[in-house]
Image (spheres, rainbow, N blue to C red):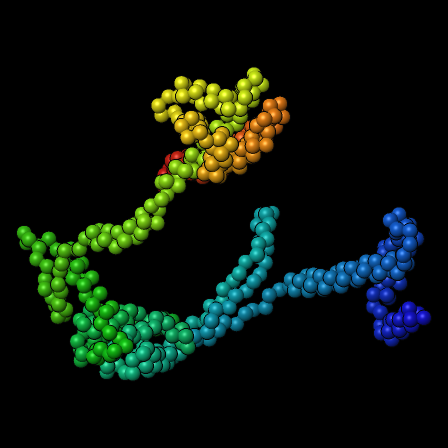
Length: 464
């Protein structure tokens, strides 16, 4: 009952609102959206129960939605194409902007034909503002002259006390006039408007000459600027740098006299003190000493740690060989203690200076302690396992403690242990090989880069 009520409610909602997708679905042939029978057949191939009809209807509505979107896109694209085709007629004349106006651009397709040859090309034509008449140009010049003194002030309050840089504009947006500047005192105020308050003392007058061009008309204007006193926000740092740069340039460009004496001041009154550059290497080394001392202190046990790690690695590496020899001797009829003693004596006779093996050296020490202090073999191997942290030695001591009186059982267990250790050693060797390959990647990349540079450099020099 509840399901029927929900279905009726959904049907009522669909009927009350316009179902655009449903209309498209009814208009389209079933072949385009998929036939219900084919949907049912395909559905039955995966499931034997379920509402196949509702699922097929949802899929068909989704497909109909895609068709509707494609139709809308086709209408929009067709409208744009029609508009583009219809707009390919003649281009109406374009009126130029007046005085001070901005250029216009005409995008067009030009077709050119001559002696049977045709050319079609997309071009962009720039329409410049029209040239002013003589009266318009004169009026524009006077307008620029009236506004120019105030236009160049920048952060300054007036031209009677110039402290900050002037903004010497090179074009007027309202009239399109072009302006070029010159200065009779470039050391105080140059043609770019930069103010030097050291070379230009407070109260110095600087004449800035502006050449104004509007179309073919031209006029000059002289503007008098008076340098003022420095303010806190302005400062002399930049001016000092300019003065020193000019002094160095003058000294470097002169070849007069047999000697060169560095002056104590510039012509503008800047005092100069010349010193030999200080060597900072010793000072830097002094600052580096404390971190180096801390590093040495922090790593004071590093050498020992590396030696211990190497010894443990040596024990792990040589222990399988010891087990192999022990198994041979046990199978030959020797007891464990005699077999260990035989291995130790053989190593003592055959070892060479500089080729000592840590595990067998420990074995010699075991034999000496067993003879001198009457310690047990099991306790000696347990102690070695505790010192070296090797689980293989620990397992061996446990096996030895449990089976020392069981000859054949001990040999069998030791054989299994020896085989496992061989496999583990092989895996460690493979891991080290892969690690070595990874470490070689960076040197190989550097070598490849060097080869590329050697190969490409001659060609680049030829191109240069």
